[in-house]
Amino acid sequence: MVKLSPSVLAADFSNLSLVMDQCGEGGASMIHVDVMDGHFVPNITMGSVVVEGLRRATDLPLDVHLMIENPHQYITDFAKAGSDMITVHIETCSDVKKVIQMIRDEGVKPGITLRPSTPLNTIEEFVKDVDLVLVMTVEPGFSGQLFITEMMERIVAVRELVDGLGESRPDISVDGDVKLHNASEVVAAGADILVSGSGIFGTTDHVSTMKEFVKIG
Image (cartoon, rainbow, N blue to C red; front, top):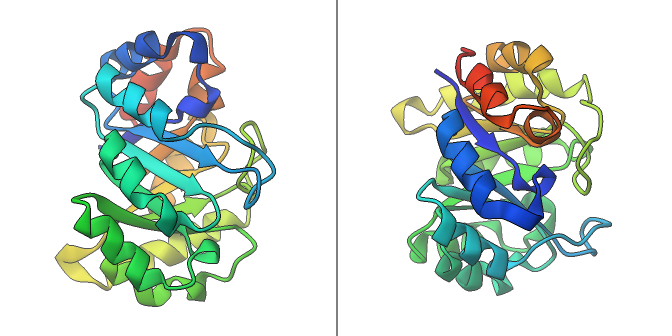
């Protein structure tokens, strides 16, 4: 069964405790937290203080996606705030192996990701060192963008890449305009984890929508 990771970026920030309760009731496996700095991407969202608040509100694992420059400077802050996984962009790391090791040293699982426009071969040598590969199917920065159809082929390519690692292979997470109408295709392409923001929180019944997601695959 596919794992669901609701993205709180699209949720109601006036009542995140309720949102976390809904995620638990809906069968979510983890929570996706998008951190943006206004530099690497043209938007500013949340920091470690929000992660700390989410940690108090839920026992679900927190998958923190750092869309920020110089992520090595903030690994400790986000780890102490309660992150269970920290995913960094290949484009922002001058020493990728060092950043991955920093995350592990904090007792947190590392993930790696890249923009849709970045060649996949830039992450190939690091896939064996992480617990998660995040495939972005929109350009990072804003919620509500349309799925870039060419990225379906990237999901397939990443699936082939990680399957070659045997039992130690990382999970594949897919983020960007993942909704009920295309979720089955995304899973068929190779996704283990579906990240969905507006696909959940843009619907009238968040819990029911999440339950439909977790039935897929």
